[in-house]
Image (cartoon, one colour):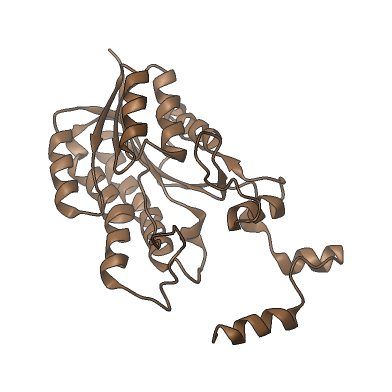
Length: 277
């Protein structure tokens, strides 16, 4: 009998790579998507062991209906990957300190934190003994931010609750719970996540100690490695996969190399004054 894995957010980027990885290893995959219907349908045509559900995790009722539907299954693995950010219509990050909207903030929290927490807790009796839960967080949840307050807060909360879930799940049913925090990730499929060198993600790749961002397939491999390891020590931990980027400091780099990565500080100050900062 095939093992069954629930993976949320499988139509793009990291989620798609995780989905493909588990399918290649012989799992039956129950996956979700929200808006990328055409991509999801194409995936479902490619794989007979993939069953997809449309869910908007920003909507509490949609999440509730989905969780009830999932009680028809028994899972060996759950990977909570689906996530969102507060973006403009042009896909620019909203500066939430300057342009705060409580409804938008709460929508991000519902998708990135409440939904995965609810899936874990409300499906606790539908996960097989010795199963594994992997919550995809982010290094953003470990760092202070400027603009995307809701995203960082939601990922910080997810890292924390994953530890608490590990405290509860393993004594009850030998289910291990971990979180994985990717750093900057370069999409290596048909999307454009981090592919522009002039974007923030592109610049991060240049500055990374390993000289590039991570790939979605590399995160998928790490997720699978943790699932099959079965080490009882692999519980309640947050694993960072960023090639050392979070150890990087631009000021220390300049000090060591005698080369400036920043524009002349006078120009920076002028730009900030023009913006009223």
